[in-house]
Length: 292
Image (cartoon, rainbow, N blue to C red; front, top):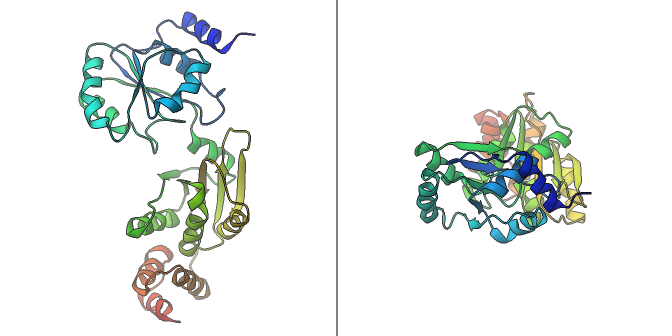
């Protein structure tokens, strides 16, 4: 059986020109299981002049496993502005550059977007090298209607921006993909239940492709209650089912108003959400928001 390094050598021998000179290669890497790397990605990473990484330390286990000794360079939100001009100069000089994130497909809730935008503006070719994606892995296993879908990434942690992001997720009529940290998952599920209704279906995918992979399906109330009892660990992606177009009932709107009030929302915010997210009339929303 070939070693991982020998496999990379053989791939490069069979595919000696996997890279495109003078092009930026956006390379997908595994989201957990290191076997989920494509042969093309191995060849590109081996043949590139430099690999731009979200975190060079995080990339090292993958590169070492497959015997890839290409130089690496950190590229993240704190150094993009200073690093991009030099990278563009190298691309203009004909070098092939690869960019990877810590896991999965770069630019989806990851750094690298500014480099791609700058390359496109400069007329430099951008080559996608597709592969693993936590978003797509969660969608295909969620058991919910997965097309069309919207990816919202990590919701804001607090304030009006958070309210607006969760309200958008709640009102979209199709699947919504969000990311969340383990310590904020229950709060986010509870906040969504207050806006979208506790009976909205959700699928929480945890540690995808890893040994402790888990997909927990149910209503927002059920899944939140489960993770209150069993605190989640690891990386999390979850899929919220789309909103239905059924006419809201007054009892349902009252329950939503009560839940929002318990979450600490002010009456004027409850009025707005009942109208915007649940289709309530202004008079009914005002009455329910102030009905204590």
